[in-house]
Image (cartoon, rainbow, N blue to C red; front, side, top):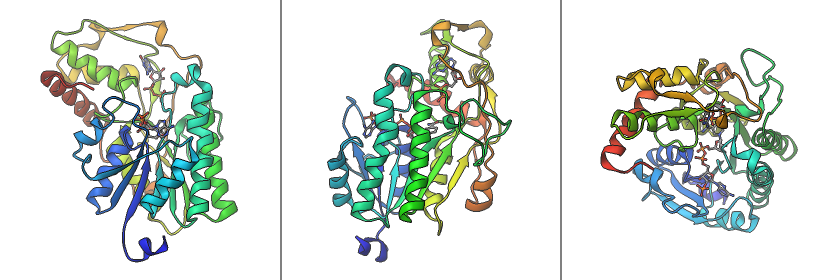
Amino acid sequence: MEKNRSNGGKRALITGVTGQDGAYLARLLLDKGYQVYGLAARRGSDALWRLRELGADAGVTLLTGDVTDVSSLLRALEQSQPAEFYNLAAQSFVDKSWDLPSVTVQVTGMAVTNVLEAIRCTDPKIRFYQATSSEVFGRVQAGVQDESTPFHPRSPYGVAKAFAHWLTVNYRESHGMHASSGILFNHESPLRGLEFVTRKISVAVARIKLGRQDKLRLGNLDARRDWGFAGDYVEAMWLMLQQDAADDYVIATGRNASVRDFCRIAFAHAGLDYEKYVEVDPAFFRRAEIDAVLGSPAKAKAKLGWSPKTSLEELVAMMVDADLRRLEKGTVS
Ligand code: NDP
Ligand code: GDP
């Protein structure tokens, strides 16, 4: 496997390649000349729609596998012989993690053990990226969260991500592996899943604008998130694996906004007043809410030279416009 790296061959294996970040990362790596392999379980009926939207479906070699199945990981590593491994696979929806706690802990947390062991046994020089989350901070102890902020996760998802983070740190410290953990704050795009609040809003705005929906029912409008653009954030993942030494980084914009603010901007972009359409429905309240998060990307800026390029207003416009286009073509996913 060493020969793949030393002869300049750039191969990368991505788990979760059919997800939002998987699609943007695959596009980025293809543009950089990588041979991109993606682990996919082929669960969905149209699992490749995101890759297709970015024109990355043809360039990615799909390997059947699941992070809970270590033999499939070993096979994928043998087939792809990567220099870089990006572990993006997860049950990633916080709210669902209360309904499916065991599944979430297995896939989002425990399975990282499978991934790291498979890498260690195959070729411990493979550079590794773990998709951690600001959900590890949970009930935040500080106004701005950075790499030194203590963890207090508030959901099974957050607990699983805290485990994944510390295991990544442990493999770096115990086995000397180039293993980095990206503590990413919420990042969105037109490829975001429909269950997340931002995409729920952008689709609703488009439907209301086209006269196909009357109201939008949401939960806590006062929750504040530090929302960035997924296309910017995958660049940070790649940069982490290009450093001489592995490390952990907070990736965020340094600005937060409420769900209400997001609604205001999204409806206004379509020439509508959100107050006429948004209704609060307690069914969408969380069992344990995280009221506000705000990340400091200072370390990423200083060490990786990374900073976000897309403003919240640009992100919202991109999402609403994409959903308007899809609805007009009848292709909302
Ligand atoms: P998505 O939910 O869009 O993608 C998750 C991916 O994981 C999908 O491709 C899914 O495949 C795959 N997957 C689920 N279970 C398994 C499994 N058992 N084995 C292999 N693959 C599996 O998430 P995002 O792209 O938004 O996020 C990428 C990663 O970053 C996730 O780990 C997420 O938790 C983390 N993250 C995301 C943030 C965000 O704001 N987007 C913030 C911080 C962290 P399938 O569709 O077939 O189920
Ligand atoms: P999360 O930060 O990973 O949980 O991302 P989400 O997009 O699922 O939720 C962001 C915030 O929006 C949370 O504080 C939710 O409580 C809040 N929220 C308010 N209404 C809704 C809703 O209808 N759906 C979702 N998913 N979240 C909502």
